[in-house]
Length: 556
Image 1 (spheres, one colour):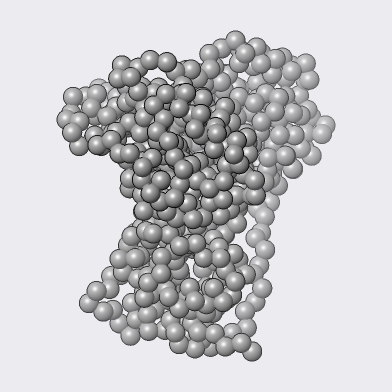
Image 2 (cartoon, rainbow, N blue to C red; image 1 turned 90 degrees about the vertical axis):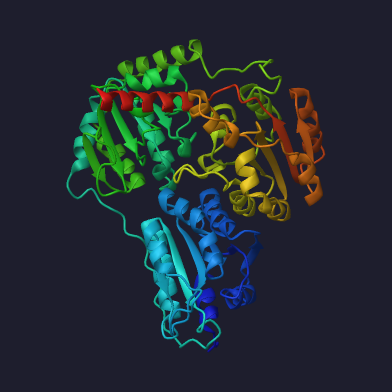
């Protein structure tokens, strides 16, 4: 029987779940990384510990496969906390393997890492010599079952000691939730009687693999369909309205507001998706099917806790003898087609701006025509967050990785791009969209991306400012000095690190990117796009208006 150290046992069990590990080596995880390499796990080095978890998180969002991040104890661990919180908030299964205080007791420099993780909502599993494998398996199964981030802690004094032999049971397959209370029968009756049905799918539907069943259900009902930003194009086809919420068009939102029965599948109905209460009509009946145990929004009238794919399949069977009138529902789709064709779409942008810099809307539209068709987009947080889902063609839900939106952070884009680059299929180009502020936060991992990606394009929306703050607070007369960033030559920085690059001051300058793509799109290209801060994104205007209305309501 093979003998393992405690760190080796952790790596051995992890190797049956993961093939990729991201991290920074230090005292607390050096033995784990040595064992991981011997077991054939692929290690991608990042330059900041926060990138370890962000990369593993994006790897899962892109591929649906688990990955691990790893850091040393103490400052290495605390550096990873923002990315750990984002994974917890976004319900992404991810594993952080970290060093920890000795089992004999904390040293003067140690902090209570388990308490810190608990404060973020992440469970910590501290391994022992006797049960290193069992505890590791328990941690991974918890992450996968609960769809969350977990911490596997290896006490410093145990890391290199021999682990006890263990007989580990095979992991159990996840159990499907059945419609035990007959709730789906009521759902089927509501859908069969609908005159203007709408199916709104979220990331939960995508993760459950429910796209084909929901698409067939929509066609059976003649329903219009939409998706959250994280389920973009999951239900694309006849009657598809695009993204729901602040990234959608007013025309599409108007149609959604006229639906009489809305089936929400695997979507949480966040304020952003709901357009701060304005998306659905006041008389619409809202049905939610979700893996959650209870409704996630007060507008939900009928709730079924179930696996979305299984539930959609059952609904198809229930509707065999009770489908709605074909003429009635085809009229609903015909009306939608007409209004979408005639109604306004997204603003095209302007050729001229007050400061002579690029309009981000016209830039986004031009980039869509230039970027390779086979693309996976990683989107950092910030004012520019909507330009990709609004203006770029996103082939599949997994091809839009929006990071930072759950925890409302910026600066995770570069690190996330490293993980996505490791996960993308051959022949697909990784595209990172970032603002200048977030890019500077994660700048150390531009080198990591250049090393990890076979084909990557970095688009920096460079307005020399923290754009969201300019629009929210500068517009109120607050000082803009802390909101401004000296204009950085990201193109020069990228070239110094080994990427090809260009400063984009006009749409004609995109020819440099086009030439690089035509030459094979190999390596990394950084497009430093100088945009104006005078254009406010419509989603931000909507959010600001909602805040004003809320303040007025409290004052009244």
